[in-house]
Amino acid sequence: MPEPDETAVEKQAIELAEKDGFAWQLDFKPVIPRAPIRPQRFLSDDRRQEYLARARAPLRKGNARS
Image (tube, rainbow, N blue to C red; front, top):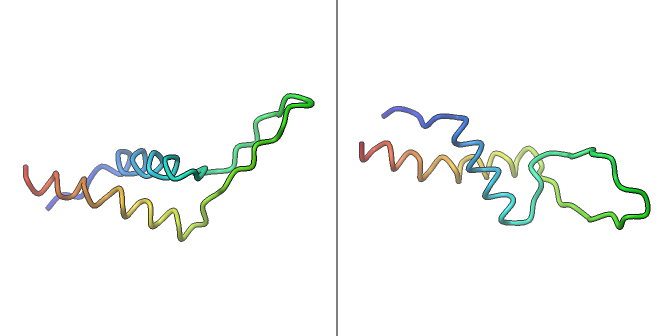
């Protein structure tokens, strides 16, 4: 069975993480002065691997049907 495209897997994993309220990576964009800072939750490497596995599972099932 062919492996799913890793670009598609990562895109899906990032979307899943964002739905759960997590930022995939640190974002150091300049903050507008006097603007409130939004707290963000970031993923550890272990949690990223969990999201990648969650994203891979449905893509593998889709490849199995082909």
